[in-house]
Length: 542
Ligand code: KIV
Ligand code: ZN
Image (cartoon, rainbow, N blue to C red; front, top):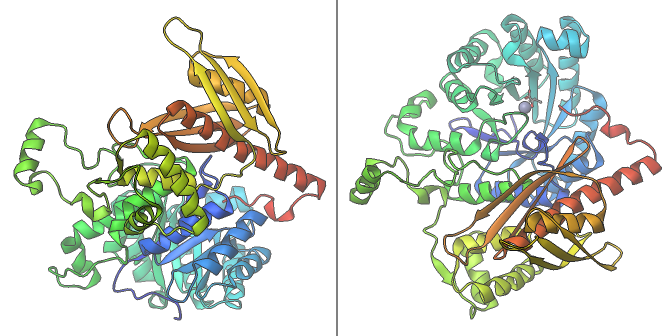
């Protein structure tokens, strides 16, 4: 089995850029996907599912670019999803061509409910399609993964047959999805054990699991699957994904790390073995989580395990007292283990470009010269207003600057007047995509509302603001504020993010950021309808 990572440890298959990106509003552009893919490689994931090549020209380009830039010989395997349809498989193979190690992941539903109502096919037909399409994928590359969609609600006897035929046709990984997040841990463990015991050629493939979090059980289900023979876990950063999301990478990895003595025997290791169970560099977890949250606009809830703002905070006096005496009284893992630094004060307004670049390198950011210059200018701007710049400030500055929202409208000026006896009024000047400067003013219920109304008067694209959030990066009156917003246009959601020491300016920039994405999507649609319907995009969401 070429390409297959060794199975004496757990293979981490990251699907943030495919299943994760499917959640409303998380849509990323190609450049942003590339930034995340590079960070996933630094994190040490074994496989990156970079997208669904056939779904749209944008998805195809993202898979191809990631295959080219990140799919190096010593980098991760790059994977594309494909329905069990020839055209899908061909698109996946073509997009993956530049990757040193590529994988086609093909799937078809096997539950009776999907067969009857969605596919309108018999079990025998699906069995034949699965076999034929795995074999077709195999004609393009050796590494083929097969998923029987809705496996968790499929008849186990039928599932065994489909898996046996898929493996015989060349599938090197068979992935068992709990598509609707229906399973409980012991049921999911039994399902994996049943597959191990009843699929005669199962030793020729790696068993993988994929699951959604509708009942909040995805991570628990996966850990039970590991105990029963699963060796690949399909997960996303911050658990983002369809509906309630996918199993969260950081929770799985840290559970396997913190409790490795418990899991070691299930992988045939001595209980005391200190060897890591995954290839993940846990110190990259926090940064990856922040990057994905900033670029997708999907905020992380404060009490989220591992990466939530409160995950390492101790509020109760008894806990604080215990932790001061000995961390282990109330902490099962050190915050530094996930890369949460002690947030040192590192730079100030006199720091030069060299010191700035060097600290970013230490924090694990590798920026191109252009991005470094952009980030340095922003740093100088912030340092003029804020005396001490911490690691977290630097991270906010970099994440803000490397965002790749289309640069269509640009904020040139924001001015507000508000107060207890004033009517909140805003004046904004925007530079249009054509380079014209337009100024308008509006009155609102508050300063942000006034700014947004003034912006709407210039941009003039109907939308509904559905989420607005401000978070401060550090404590203190001069802290950088991060604004994340989500807006709706028809059925589509667009997100925007910006950081600034002035939260009104950050609000305006976040709004423009989201409007630029919306505006670009509308332009794209117009180009497509002028050039005819894109056949690739029809009915391909999973
Ligand atoms: O949830 C699911 O079943 C999927 C498959 C395509 C693996 O995402
Ligand atoms: Zn899924």
